[in-house]
View: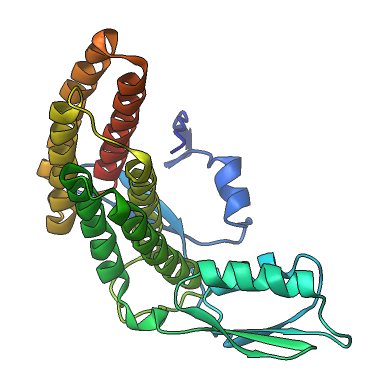
Length: 294
């Protein structure tokens, strides 16, 4: 998360601040773009570009190039339901192999037709999963990973993380479709562009926590600290689900206390346990970042 500060300027009876150039560039804005503003109850101000409604494309046809597999991923993530790779000549086997590898990694996406000169990829079912349900599922899958580690169910960690990755991709598809076209990709119809961007950042933190837990292995020396970090995550999850900003603020105080405790414990730990504790400290920071978005 980037932070910027600007001095407030006054011209006649109006006040102005300049917007970060990186924000303007990343969202492809110009001098004619419309910016929506929301004043929160805590006095903070949120800005987001106003989206123009557009018709969502159902199908796109790509040429069979060396890097077409990456284009398949890009268009699937923007919500295109059908991606067709077409060629006047037989499609090389190495390109087919790349396409199949990427398609297997995407959720609810399959090759439904394949000939020498044509490959048809289709997204199945991602629209039937409400965006908020996908976020809720991601949160509870992390709870499963904490439980897997406590129970020593190491073999289940990879499977659970794969489910996290799939739901994360579904969430990305929903958000990118909405931000690109202004059309909702799922049954949800009540979130704003600002909330959509917050959801994207929030779920990115969830995925990163899952990535850490996937490789983490508990030892006696870190079990107590691990349990406290799990409790902090549960508090963060519950604050998000209840949209409780007071609980979200409490995460900050708990985070400071836990960070101090974990950092001080590094002195007496062996190398492996130090690395594991550092991973848990990263999870604490991700929880704090998630609380910021509630």
